[in-house]
Image 1 (tube, rainbow, N blue to C red):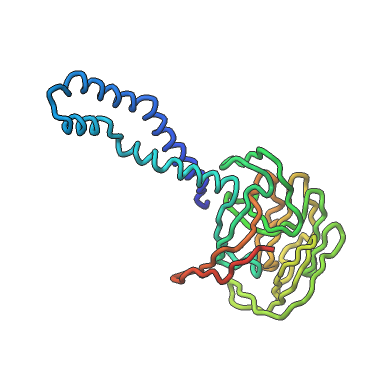
Image 2: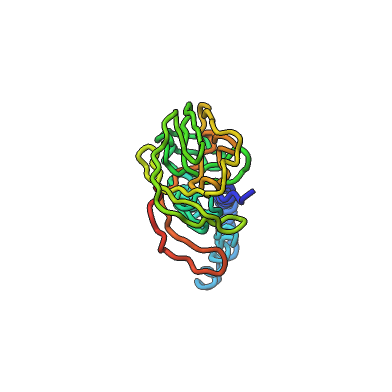
Length: 279
């Protein structure tokens, strides 16, 4: 399972907040009382500088409290931004090629599909529902990690994928040939084709491997209520809803909106050459 940075961030915020609260409720009072006792019993006859140094020492916050007070507001702001506004992700696989490449750093709009609590994902407020053709980050039903695919089917839709053509509710999605290409696979480069597909007015590229069949005996799916059917743009090299089923509405993370950085695997410097809005 991938590291859940939401849990890590919430834990740090809670820890720093508890230290700050503990200091305010208990330890600060002890320091104030220590200063009062010193002024009453020990300050007489001492120079002004000695008294000032002694009081400064008595009021000094423990290092852990000092760090907690410094980090808490910063971590809280990051938590709010990351949980409710925009969160960065890195693309680890090639299932969304050619739209997204391995090493792309993307921004995900966390409130596009509703305001949700971090970690547990409970929806606090509705904003909008996912639409066909949008690129969405979610947690799939078979694995507790983030995936990114394109929304193909909405609740109640009938999705059919056959002979490299996509049908939604009986209508074939428009697809235009662009060019012949070589597709990188685990067994090397294979001949393939690049097409432009249009779903719900969203035009985006998809690629196919000429030699690959459907690879799945099932070609038709009905999307249950409260679920979404997801597919990768790298149609013959994508683990998606054709394999592990539709995604529950409660497992939605957000809508992918832009590529802001790219770094090829290995010892390569990041580049902004692929900065673009995600269609």
